[in-house]
Length: 180
Image 1 (cartoon, one colour):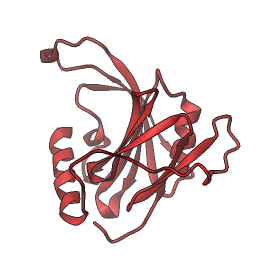
Image 2 (cartoon, helix red, strand yellow):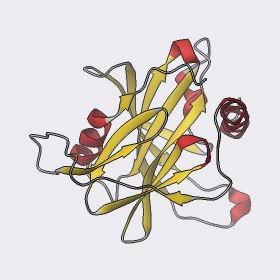
Image 3 (tube, helix red, strand yellow):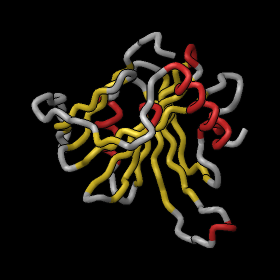
């Protein structure tokens, strides 16, 4: 299935069970709530939604998008985000990958609350767009089989180093709710 159809299905599904606003809102972050990190990138902002919480570096901003999704920015440039996608356990992991992407590296990570697959992807714009810029992203897919969803936490590798990406990923806490 193509990612757009999965994304559209996920949004419709989430909209039927959660209340979403049509306008993009900047999240209130609380710098006092710090995640303890032994790494060199301290995470100072704790972001709470109905479905999860996550911590990001103080230099970043987070915008809440419809469907409890996030866009991460640094100096007004989008550097990553968190999408919630439909997931079908009988389908390959490629169902979660963006269109026009090539897998450079893929591995399963240990020590998370659920199965996590980390993929480094090279993303090429569609030929019809006329755009030629190829971007490299790291995607961390948090797979929640019983809910048939995956959290896609992703970052542009040119803007976010791997250790920071992993620190943010380690801070993601799923709220096991029945809001689905």
